[in-house]
Length: 384
Ligand code: UD1
Ligand code: UDP
Image 1: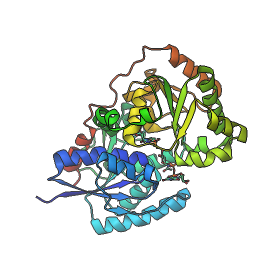
Image 2 (image 1 turned 60 degrees about the vertical axis):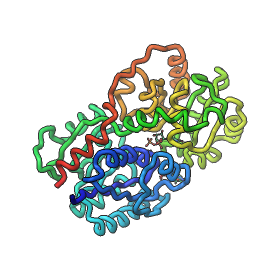
Image 3 (image 1 turned 90 degrees about the vertical axis):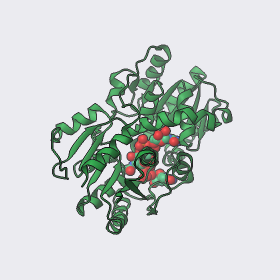
Image 4 (image 1 turned 180 degrees about the vertical axis):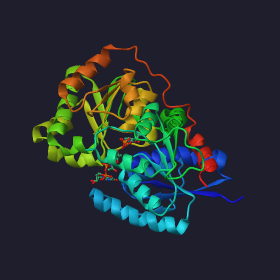
């Protein structure tokens, strides 16, 4: 049988993790029908931001690596577009599969749509309604050149309807007649799949002597938090205050972007206080299984990450969102997450609230753990 060829673009850490779900579904159920060609743009390149996930999550080795590396938005995206176009022309896939909202996503969307290769967008429809976020621009532009759009949440689906996408378009689908689906979240597929083995296969809790329910897990990497000294200072002041006053440990696997900017954007006094605090452990980025082990055992999670907000929910942990808004509005609406921005009082109040409140709700909002299979079936059925 002739294989249907998809070309998957990955580049940033969360995309490598998301792609694992689809690669797994292809291997399990569609290997006789779908051939996947993986292109790594090289947006993330440190061993612990990229290779570790291939090793741990059994993702096929990328067929191509553009090695684009870091750079300004324009330069990075342009270099990716050029490289992806060349590969598309050579590989002639039936569709390109794009994840999320990074510069790698946007580059794939532009390169493929201009040469009439159908775009499949996974994690479509999410909006922060804040166009100062580079990701908001990337996701809007990608959605509007897509042929099949898969939204993880109902809110995402409704956002697409508000932007003019139609619920009842009929096949054949195309860039001018796209199809939108609400299908659950491939990250939920992954969390379910890897949760069972995370603690067994990692020793992160032991390495850092962490006890269940007795530490806060925090991540910070959004550009407006890292690049603005006032916001970064406020976030670390809040962490230092909560840690010291409550004698609670913080474990912070720090994104390289933040690690580079910390000494520059914090005062030397605060930087020293954070580095020498007996309660605060800043560590290198961890693997996905280590991250799951930390998430499952934390008392609470503080983050500006999209993926980590959701994983807090999957593992039934309260989450303090270190942003002024979120695309994952369901988490806030059901009360398990609070938006605290980079506001010390709000962060401390949210910590105190969640420390006292035990009866939080975590309804099933992200599907049944089968989103990747659903996506493969629709791609096979509707991309011609
Ligand atoms: C990118 C995405 C963001 C996503 C995040 C996931 C865009 C615009 N942003 O942000 O949506 O949430 O990935 O982690 O696409 N760096 C390293 N080593 C690496 C990678 C990056 O040191 O392996 C440092 C470099 O100094 C680089 C900086 O991090 O300049 C930012 O990297 P970049 O990929 O541009 O953006 P992220 O902040 O990682
Ligand atoms: N993650 C990880 N190691 C870390 C930090 C995060 O494996 O040290 C995982 C996390 O579990 C989630 C994904 O990376 O699945 C989220 O990526 P990130 O926070 O970089 O980006 P975002 O989701 O905000 O785009």
